[in-house]
Image 1 (cartoon, helix red, strand yellow):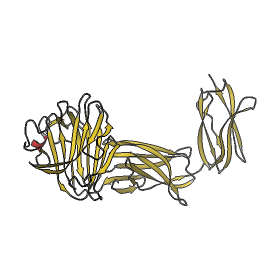
Image 2 (image 1 turned 135 degrees about the vertical axis):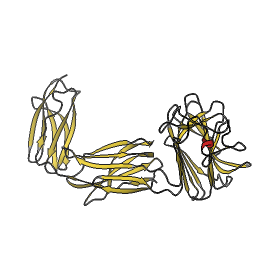
Image 3 (image 1 turned 60 degrees about the vertical axis):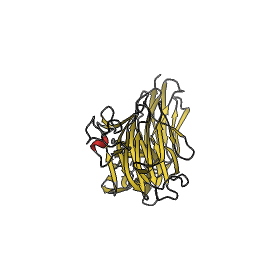
Image 4 (image 1 turned 180 degrees about the horizontal axis):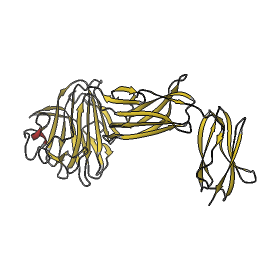
Length: 407
């Protein structure tokens, strides 16, 4: 679940990450392009022994050929063997997140290590291959190989969670926001119950894998919601707008609403962008809100089912004062047009369409409606050119207007 702190003022709030006890992040912007990763930062990166940082073959280079944010990435080609040591983590929940780009006709590979004790002892907990053409496979896990697909020639996210507090310890892998597998990290006790490192290796002469925005932490990346507002349009509908700064594994947002006398219930859903570091904007129109004060909150849901609530916002709706049937738009029309209407009090209504001699040809709305404003679409594809009447009826009122269909 994403961990957030909420700040709320009027219709504004911000999700920000909790202070992270242990976090490493790089987008390689502080590195010098054309030089090697571990050579520039031997504190956080190393290479596969017996080689040492700055090894001309083993140490990976910083590239500007492809980058996710903003201009640089690390590239893994044949015989590069770059390692991010974590130390021997024996407890806690740990998150590894990074972006990957594999050009057309190329391949890639990375693994996670339960043991990394140079130069003699190594223990692979999971190996992940990106084969040429968009197919991938996970090996060295129960039931392997586990097959998946990935987008060629496009950046996509990798997310790996290692839960050393579970019994047994658990690994969860997402590739391009799709759950690839969840497995017993220790593989029935045959793998050391710890997390030691992450390895990027150029396994074949065809390997060329770029990775960027690399992050290792004991706290998952939050969906950073930078604003959440609600307003009422001239139809009495509530327009909700919100924006995010970053997203990781974001399946989407359930929109929940309550009144002063009711509990929260879900009224809609808007899909998220999965994983992105780009700002994103969202909008949802609630056409069923009742007169009075309505409260809204967002339930942000991850692809693995975990979720986080926003703070609530308050929106007041003042119902229309008149029984009104608006002129359809566009008019004349072909083949469809929109009709807006409003009713000042709750009750049964009927909105129908008649031909010029008074014969009913369509019913656009019928039954109980809360007081409010509404909009419907009339599709006249099966009707002939001509003048038609549309009529709104309630218990106490009737209004009729003309419209013209031109084909």
